[in-house]
Length: 434
Image (cartoon, rainbow, N blue to C red):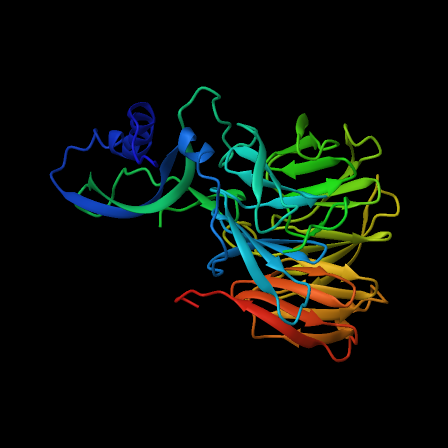
Protein backbone atom coordinates (compact mmCIF):
# COMPACT_ATOMS: atom_id res chain seq x y z
CA UNK A 1 0.00 0.00 0.00
CA UNK A 2 1.10 3.60 -0.48
CA UNK A 3 2.76 5.29 2.46
CA UNK A 4 2.84 9.04 3.02
CA UNK A 5 5.66 8.93 5.55
CA UNK A 6 8.81 6.92 6.13
CA UNK A 7 11.32 7.64 8.91
CA UNK A 8 14.47 8.56 6.96
CA UNK A 9 12.92 10.22 3.92
CA UNK A 10 10.47 11.97 6.19
CA UNK A 11 13.34 13.62 8.02
CA UNK A 12 14.93 14.73 4.75
CA UNK A 13 11.78 16.39 3.46
CA UNK A 14 11.09 17.89 6.87
CA UNK A 15 14.48 19.60 6.72
CA UNK A 16 13.72 20.91 3.24
CA UNK A 17 10.37 22.29 4.29
CA UNK A 18 11.53 23.88 7.50
CA UNK A 19 14.94 25.10 6.33
CA UNK A 20 13.48 28.58 5.76
CA UNK A 21 12.67 28.79 9.46
CA UNK A 22 16.32 28.24 10.37
CA UNK A 23 17.19 31.50 8.67
CA UNK A 24 14.96 33.47 10.99
CA UNK A 25 16.85 32.93 14.23
CA UNK A 26 18.58 36.32 14.13
CA UNK A 27 15.31 38.26 14.33
CA UNK A 28 14.83 39.86 17.73
CA UNK A 29 11.59 41.75 17.19
CA UNK A 30 8.31 40.43 18.57
CA UNK A 31 6.26 40.95 15.38
CA UNK A 32 5.10 37.73 13.69
CA UNK A 33 3.52 37.13 10.29
CA UNK A 34 2.60 34.07 8.23
CA UNK A 35 3.09 33.01 4.64
CA UNK A 36 1.24 30.29 2.75
CA UNK A 37 2.85 28.48 -0.16
CA UNK A 38 2.48 25.26 -2.14
CA UNK A 39 4.88 22.34 -1.92
CA UNK A 40 4.99 19.07 -3.82
CA UNK A 41 4.71 16.33 -1.21
CA UNK A 42 6.01 12.86 -2.14
CA UNK A 43 3.75 9.82 -2.07
CA UNK A 44 5.45 6.47 -1.58
CA UNK A 45 4.50 3.09 -2.96
CA UNK A 46 5.64 -0.30 -1.73
CA UNK A 47 7.62 -2.14 -4.37
CA UNK A 48 5.83 -5.37 -3.49
CA UNK A 49 2.47 -3.72 -4.12
CA UNK A 50 3.60 -2.59 -7.57
CA UNK A 51 4.72 -6.09 -8.53
CA UNK A 52 1.37 -7.63 -7.54
CA UNK A 53 -0.92 -4.96 -9.00
CA UNK A 54 -1.10 -6.12 -12.66
CA UNK A 55 -4.75 -7.01 -13.40
CA UNK A 56 -7.16 -7.52 -16.29
CA UNK A 57 -10.36 -5.70 -15.44
CA UNK A 58 -12.50 -5.81 -18.58
CA UNK A 59 -13.59 -2.67 -20.43
CA UNK A 60 -13.97 0.61 -18.56
CA UNK A 61 -14.60 4.21 -19.56
CA UNK A 62 -11.94 6.75 -20.45
CA UNK A 63 -11.24 9.19 -17.64
CA UNK A 64 -7.75 10.66 -18.12
CA UNK A 65 -6.43 9.64 -21.56
CA UNK A 66 -2.74 10.00 -22.34
CA UNK A 67 -0.66 8.42 -25.13
CA UNK A 68 -2.09 6.42 -28.03
CA UNK A 69 -0.69 3.50 -30.04
CA UNK A 70 -2.03 1.45 -32.94
CA UNK A 71 -1.25 -2.09 -34.10
CA UNK A 72 -3.29 -3.60 -36.89
CA UNK A 73 -6.98 -3.19 -36.11
CA UNK A 74 -6.35 -2.54 -32.40
CA UNK A 75 -5.86 0.74 -30.60
CA UNK A 76 -4.22 1.19 -27.23
CA UNK A 77 -5.00 4.22 -25.09
CA UNK A 78 -3.11 4.99 -21.92
CA UNK A 79 -5.19 5.87 -18.86
CA UNK A 80 -2.65 8.09 -17.15
CA UNK A 81 -0.79 6.28 -14.38
CA UNK A 82 -3.42 3.51 -14.30
CA UNK A 83 -3.12 1.27 -17.34
CA UNK A 84 -4.10 0.67 -20.97
CA UNK A 85 -7.45 0.47 -22.76
CA UNK A 86 -7.60 -2.01 -25.66
CA UNK A 87 -9.92 -0.97 -28.49
CA UNK A 88 -11.12 -3.13 -31.38
CA UNK A 89 -11.00 -0.67 -34.28
CA UNK A 90 -11.98 -3.03 -37.09
CA UNK A 91 -14.70 -0.50 -37.89
CA UNK A 92 -13.34 3.04 -37.23
CA UNK A 93 -16.90 4.34 -37.31
CA UNK A 94 -17.81 2.09 -34.37
CA UNK A 95 -14.75 1.30 -32.20
CA UNK A 96 -15.34 -1.13 -29.33
CA UNK A 97 -13.51 -1.01 -26.00
CA UNK A 98 -12.89 -4.65 -25.18
CA UNK A 99 -10.46 -4.68 -22.26
CA UNK A 100 -8.52 -2.66 -19.73
CA UNK A 101 -5.13 -3.73 -18.38
CA UNK A 102 -4.40 -2.28 -14.96
CA UNK A 103 -0.74 -1.20 -14.84
CA UNK A 104 0.12 1.22 -12.02
CA UNK A 105 2.34 4.07 -13.12
CA UNK A 106 1.80 3.47 -16.83
CA UNK A 107 2.39 6.34 -19.25
CA UNK A 108 3.94 4.86 -22.40
CA UNK A 109 3.70 1.71 -24.52
CA UNK A 110 4.79 0.02 -27.73
CA UNK A 111 3.87 -3.23 -29.50
CA UNK A 112 5.87 -5.73 -31.51
CA UNK A 113 4.11 -8.77 -32.85
CA UNK A 114 1.93 -10.11 -30.05
CA UNK A 115 3.82 -8.41 -27.23
CA UNK A 116 2.86 -5.15 -25.58
CA UNK A 117 5.61 -3.32 -23.69
CA UNK A 118 4.71 -0.72 -21.07
CA UNK A 119 6.25 1.19 -18.21
CA UNK A 120 5.00 0.56 -14.69
CA UNK A 121 6.68 3.27 -12.65
CA UNK A 122 10.18 1.76 -12.19
CA UNK A 123 9.63 -1.45 -14.20
CA UNK A 124 9.21 -2.49 -17.82
CA UNK A 125 6.45 -5.06 -18.27
CA UNK A 126 5.89 -7.31 -21.29
CA UNK A 127 2.42 -8.72 -22.02
CA UNK A 128 1.13 -11.36 -24.42
CA UNK A 129 -1.78 -9.77 -26.30
CA UNK A 130 -2.29 -12.50 -28.91
CA UNK A 131 -5.77 -12.75 -27.40
CA UNK A 132 -6.71 -9.18 -26.42
CA UNK A 133 -9.52 -10.54 -24.26
CA UNK A 134 -7.07 -12.54 -22.18
CA UNK A 135 -3.89 -10.50 -21.80
CA UNK A 136 -1.11 -12.21 -19.86
CA UNK A 137 1.91 -10.73 -18.11
CA UNK A 138 4.90 -12.67 -19.44
CA UNK A 139 7.92 -10.72 -18.24
CA UNK A 140 9.11 -7.85 -16.12
CA UNK A 141 12.43 -5.99 -15.95
CA UNK A 142 12.62 -4.48 -12.50
CA UNK A 143 14.13 -1.14 -11.43
CA UNK A 144 14.99 -0.08 -14.97
CA UNK A 145 13.33 3.34 -15.04
CA UNK A 146 13.92 6.37 -12.81
CA UNK A 147 10.93 8.06 -11.23
CA UNK A 148 10.80 11.86 -11.22
CA UNK A 149 14.44 12.02 -12.24
CA UNK A 150 15.61 9.78 -9.39
CA UNK A 151 17.03 6.28 -9.67
CA UNK A 152 15.53 3.62 -7.43
CA UNK A 153 17.74 1.73 -5.01
CA UNK A 154 17.46 -1.97 -5.79
CA UNK A 155 17.17 -2.81 -2.12
CA UNK A 156 14.62 -0.15 -1.19
CA UNK A 157 11.20 -1.44 -0.22
CA UNK A 158 9.54 1.78 -1.41
CA UNK A 159 9.86 4.43 -4.10
CA UNK A 160 8.28 7.81 -4.80
CA UNK A 161 5.32 7.16 -7.08
CA UNK A 162 4.03 10.71 -7.37
CA UNK A 163 3.97 14.18 -5.89
CA UNK A 164 0.80 15.83 -4.63
CA UNK A 165 0.29 19.52 -3.97
CA UNK A 166 0.02 20.60 -0.35
CA UNK A 167 -0.44 24.10 1.04
CA UNK A 168 1.84 25.01 3.93
CA UNK A 169 1.34 28.00 6.23
CA UNK A 170 4.50 29.09 7.99
CA UNK A 171 4.98 31.69 10.72
CA UNK A 172 7.98 34.02 10.55
CA UNK A 173 9.38 37.05 12.37
CA UNK A 174 9.53 40.47 10.77
CA UNK A 175 10.85 43.88 11.79
CA UNK A 176 7.29 45.19 12.27
CA UNK A 177 7.56 47.15 9.02
CA UNK A 178 6.72 44.21 6.81
CA UNK A 179 10.34 43.28 6.11
CA UNK A 180 11.39 39.67 6.62
CA UNK A 181 14.40 37.45 6.21
CA UNK A 182 12.25 34.48 5.08
CA UNK A 183 13.79 32.37 2.33
CA UNK A 184 11.76 32.66 -0.85
CA UNK A 185 13.62 30.34 -3.16
CA UNK A 186 11.90 28.35 -5.91
CA UNK A 187 9.98 25.20 -5.08
CA UNK A 188 10.18 22.05 -7.14
CA UNK A 189 7.18 21.34 -9.30
CA UNK A 190 6.52 18.19 -11.33
CA UNK A 191 4.55 18.78 -14.48
CA UNK A 192 3.45 16.94 -17.60
CA UNK A 193 3.36 13.22 -18.26
CA UNK A 194 6.34 11.61 -16.41
CA UNK A 195 7.96 14.56 -18.03
CA UNK A 196 9.71 17.72 -17.00
CA UNK A 197 10.87 19.24 -13.78
CA UNK A 198 10.73 23.02 -13.60
CA UNK A 199 11.50 25.47 -10.86
CA UNK A 200 8.62 27.68 -9.90
CA UNK A 201 7.76 30.13 -7.21
CA UNK A 202 5.96 29.23 -4.00
CA UNK A 203 2.37 29.41 -5.12
CA UNK A 204 -11.55 -10.85 -30.02
CA UNK A 205 -9.39 -11.68 -32.92
CA UNK A 206 -5.70 -12.48 -32.81
CA UNK A 207 -3.21 -9.65 -33.01
CA UNK A 208 -1.96 -9.62 -36.62
CA UNK A 209 1.61 -9.64 -37.85
CA UNK A 210 5.06 -9.66 -36.29
CA UNK A 211 6.03 -6.07 -37.09
CA UNK A 212 5.86 -3.15 -34.69
CA UNK A 213 2.88 -0.84 -34.35
CA UNK A 214 2.83 2.94 -34.51
CA UNK A 215 2.84 5.58 -31.80
CA UNK A 216 2.26 9.30 -31.83
CA UNK A 217 4.74 12.18 -31.81
CA UNK A 218 4.52 12.49 -28.01
CA UNK A 219 5.82 8.94 -27.49
CA UNK A 220 8.69 8.11 -25.15
CA UNK A 221 8.68 4.47 -26.33
CA UNK A 222 9.49 3.44 -29.87
CA UNK A 223 10.52 0.26 -31.69
CA UNK A 224 12.96 -0.02 -34.56
CA UNK A 225 13.69 -3.51 -35.83
CA UNK A 226 14.49 -5.79 -32.91
CA UNK A 227 15.04 -3.01 -30.42
CA UNK A 228 12.85 -1.02 -28.08
CA UNK A 229 14.05 2.48 -27.23
CA UNK A 230 12.70 4.41 -24.25
CA UNK A 231 13.58 7.91 -23.09
CA UNK A 232 13.36 9.40 -19.62
CA UNK A 233 14.23 12.93 -18.49
CA UNK A 234 17.92 12.50 -19.28
CA UNK A 235 18.60 9.04 -20.72
CA UNK A 236 17.75 6.64 -23.53
CA UNK A 237 17.41 3.01 -22.45
CA UNK A 238 17.79 0.27 -25.07
CA UNK A 239 16.17 -3.17 -24.97
CA UNK A 240 16.86 -6.12 -27.24
CA UNK A 241 13.47 -7.60 -28.17
CA UNK A 242 14.64 -10.21 -30.67
CA UNK A 243 12.88 -12.64 -28.36
CA UNK A 244 9.67 -10.64 -28.03
CA UNK A 245 8.54 -12.02 -24.70
CA UNK A 246 11.98 -11.88 -23.13
CA UNK A 247 13.29 -8.31 -23.48
CA UNK A 248 16.90 -7.77 -22.46
CA UNK A 249 18.12 -4.43 -21.12
CA UNK A 250 20.95 -3.02 -23.21
CA UNK A 251 22.92 0.19 -23.24
CA UNK A 252 21.78 3.33 -21.41
CA UNK A 253 22.81 6.55 -23.16
CA UNK A 254 22.92 9.92 -21.43
CA UNK A 255 21.13 12.53 -23.53
CA UNK A 256 21.24 15.58 -21.28
CA UNK A 257 18.36 17.05 -19.29
CA UNK A 258 14.82 17.79 -20.45
CA UNK A 259 14.26 14.85 -22.82
CA UNK A 260 10.63 14.49 -23.94
CA UNK A 261 10.01 12.42 -27.07
CA UNK A 262 11.57 9.96 -29.52
CA UNK A 263 10.76 9.43 -33.20
CA UNK A 264 12.42 6.82 -35.47
CA UNK A 265 12.95 7.48 -39.17
CA UNK A 266 14.97 5.25 -41.51
CA UNK A 267 18.29 4.58 -39.73
CA UNK A 268 18.04 7.53 -37.36
CA UNK A 269 16.42 8.48 -34.07
CA UNK A 270 15.10 12.01 -33.53
CA UNK A 271 14.82 12.99 -29.90
CA UNK A 272 12.91 16.05 -28.74
CA UNK A 273 13.93 17.95 -25.63
CA UNK A 274 13.06 21.24 -23.98
CA UNK A 275 16.21 22.82 -25.47
CA UNK A 276 16.61 21.17 -28.86
CA UNK A 277 16.26 18.23 -31.24
CA UNK A 278 18.96 15.53 -31.02
CA UNK A 279 19.73 13.36 -34.04
CA UNK A 280 21.27 9.90 -33.54
CA UNK A 281 22.61 7.53 -36.16
CA UNK A 282 20.96 4.16 -35.49
CA UNK A 283 22.76 2.13 -38.16
CA UNK A 284 24.03 0.00 -35.31
CA UNK A 285 20.81 -0.44 -33.31
CA UNK A 286 22.64 -1.63 -30.21
CA UNK A 287 24.69 1.56 -29.99
CA UNK A 288 23.15 4.75 -31.45
CA UNK A 289 25.67 7.53 -32.14
CA UNK A 290 25.00 11.25 -31.66
CA UNK A 291 25.23 13.18 -34.92
CA UNK A 292 24.00 16.65 -34.06
CA UNK A 293 21.72 18.84 -31.97
CA UNK A 294 19.46 21.53 -33.34
CA UNK A 295 19.07 24.02 -30.49
CA UNK A 296 16.00 26.16 -29.88
CA UNK A 297 14.48 28.29 -27.14
CA UNK A 298 13.31 26.56 -23.97
CA UNK A 299 9.98 24.92 -24.90
CA UNK A 300 8.23 21.58 -25.17
CA UNK A 301 9.36 19.87 -28.34
CA UNK A 302 7.79 16.90 -30.14
CA UNK A 303 9.24 16.19 -33.59
CA UNK A 304 8.23 14.22 -36.68
CA UNK A 305 10.26 13.61 -39.82
CA UNK A 306 9.36 13.18 -43.47
CA UNK A 307 12.06 12.92 -46.12
CA UNK A 308 14.68 15.63 -45.65
CA UNK A 309 12.51 17.74 -43.36
CA UNK A 310 11.95 17.65 -39.63
CA UNK A 311 8.87 19.36 -38.23
CA UNK A 312 9.07 20.57 -34.65
CA UNK A 313 6.42 22.23 -32.49
CA UNK A 314 7.44 24.49 -29.62
CA UNK A 315 4.90 25.48 -27.00
CA UNK A 316 4.66 27.39 -23.78
CA UNK A 317 3.31 26.11 -20.47
CA UNK A 318 4.37 25.26 -16.94
CA UNK A 319 6.05 21.99 -17.91
CA UNK A 320 7.97 23.69 -20.71
CA UNK A 321 9.10 26.86 -18.93
CA UNK A 322 8.87 28.73 -22.23
CA UNK A 323 6.81 31.40 -23.92
CA UNK A 324 7.13 30.33 -27.55
CA UNK A 325 4.30 28.84 -29.62
CA UNK A 326 5.41 27.96 -33.11
CA UNK A 327 6.03 25.33 -35.78
CA UNK A 328 9.58 25.05 -37.11
CA UNK A 329 10.72 23.42 -40.35
CA UNK A 330 14.28 22.09 -40.37
CA UNK A 331 16.39 20.78 -43.26
CA UNK A 332 18.00 17.51 -42.14
CA UNK A 333 19.43 16.43 -45.51
CA UNK A 334 22.78 16.68 -43.74
CA UNK A 335 21.99 15.10 -40.39
CA UNK A 336 25.26 16.39 -38.95
CA UNK A 337 24.28 19.97 -39.65
CA UNK A 338 20.50 20.58 -39.51
CA UNK A 339 19.42 23.96 -40.87
CA UNK A 340 16.43 26.07 -39.89
CA UNK A 341 14.20 26.87 -42.89
CA UNK A 342 11.00 28.44 -41.62
CA UNK A 343 9.05 29.33 -38.47
CA UNK A 344 5.26 29.58 -38.31
CA UNK A 345 3.50 31.18 -35.32
CA UNK A 346 0.95 28.88 -33.67
CA UNK A 347 -1.43 29.11 -30.70
CA UNK A 348 -0.30 26.26 -28.41
CA UNK A 349 1.00 23.38 -30.57
CA UNK A 350 1.29 19.88 -29.11
CA UNK A 351 1.60 16.63 -31.10
CA UNK A 352 1.73 16.43 -34.88
CA UNK A 353 1.70 13.89 -37.69
CA UNK A 354 2.40 13.82 -41.44
CA UNK A 355 0.90 11.75 -44.22
CA UNK A 356 2.57 12.58 -47.54
CA UNK A 357 1.70 16.25 -48.14
CA UNK A 358 -0.73 16.65 -45.24
CA UNK A 359 0.24 17.90 -41.78
CA UNK A 360 -2.05 17.31 -38.80
CA UNK A 361 -1.22 19.59 -35.88
CA UNK A 362 -2.76 19.56 -32.39
CA UNK A 363 -3.25 23.01 -30.87
CA UNK A 364 -4.29 21.98 -27.37
CA UNK A 365 -7.43 23.83 -26.32
CA UNK A 366 -7.48 25.50 -29.74
CA UNK A 367 -8.29 22.26 -31.53
CA UNK A 368 -6.88 20.40 -34.54
CA UNK A 369 -5.43 22.06 -37.65
CA UNK A 370 -4.85 20.39 -41.01
CA UNK A 371 -2.35 21.89 -43.50
CA UNK A 372 -1.34 21.13 -47.07
CA UNK A 373 2.49 21.14 -46.91
CA UNK A 374 3.41 20.52 -50.55
CA UNK A 375 5.25 23.82 -50.27
CA UNK A 376 6.89 23.78 -46.85
CA UNK A 377 7.64 27.50 -47.17
CA UNK A 378 3.96 28.41 -47.51
CA UNK A 379 2.29 26.25 -44.89
CA UNK A 380 0.48 29.21 -43.32
CA UNK A 381 -1.20 29.90 -46.67
CA UNK A 382 -2.61 26.37 -46.95
CA UNK A 383 -4.77 25.66 -43.91
CA UNK A 384 -7.27 23.04 -45.10
CA UNK A 385 -9.36 22.61 -41.93
CA UNK A 386 -9.55 23.73 -38.32
CA UNK A 387 -11.61 21.71 -35.83
CA UNK A 388 -12.10 23.96 -32.83
CA UNK A 389 -14.30 21.87 -30.58
CA UNK A 390 -11.57 19.55 -29.25
CA UNK A 391 -8.68 19.85 -26.83
CA UNK A 392 -6.11 18.06 -29.00
CA UNK A 393 -2.98 16.37 -27.62
CA UNK A 394 -1.60 13.97 -30.27
CA UNK A 395 -2.40 12.30 -33.61
CA UNK A 396 -1.56 9.21 -35.65
CA UNK A 397 -2.33 9.38 -39.41
CA UNK A 398 -3.18 5.96 -40.87
CA UNK A 399 -3.43 6.58 -44.62
CA UNK A 400 -7.08 7.54 -44.93
CA UNK A 401 -8.12 7.85 -41.29
CA UNK A 402 -6.71 9.88 -38.43
CA UNK A 403 -6.57 9.06 -34.73
CA UNK A 404 -6.61 12.08 -32.45
CA UNK A 405 -6.43 11.92 -28.66
CA UNK A 406 -7.26 14.83 -26.43
CA UNK A 407 -8.68 15.88 -23.11
CA UNK A 408 -12.20 15.04 -24.28
CA UNK A 409 -11.50 11.61 -25.71
CA UNK A 410 -10.42 9.75 -28.84
CA UNK A 411 -11.61 11.11 -32.20
CA UNK A 412 -11.33 9.41 -35.60
CA UNK A 413 -11.54 11.29 -38.87
CA UNK A 414 -11.79 10.20 -42.50
CA UNK A 415 -9.38 12.33 -44.54
CA UNK A 416 -9.49 10.32 -47.78
CA UNK A 417 -10.71 13.60 -49.28
CA UNK A 418 -8.59 16.30 -47.68
CA UNK A 419 -11.13 18.91 -48.71
CA UNK A 420 -13.98 17.07 -46.99
CA UNK A 421 -12.62 15.68 -43.73
CA UNK A 422 -15.34 13.86 -41.79
CA UNK A 423 -15.66 12.80 -38.17
CA UNK A 424 -16.09 9.03 -38.03
CA UNK A 425 -16.42 8.36 -34.32
CA UNK A 426 -15.59 9.49 -30.82
CA UNK A 427 -14.87 7.61 -27.62
CA UNK A 428 -15.67 10.27 -25.02
CA UNK A 429 -14.08 10.89 -21.67
CA UNK A 430 -16.60 10.19 -18.95
CA UNK A 431 -15.61 12.75 -16.38
CA UNK A 432 -17.55 15.45 -14.60
CA UNK A 433 -15.07 18.29 -15.04
CA UNK A 434 -15.14 18.53 -18.84
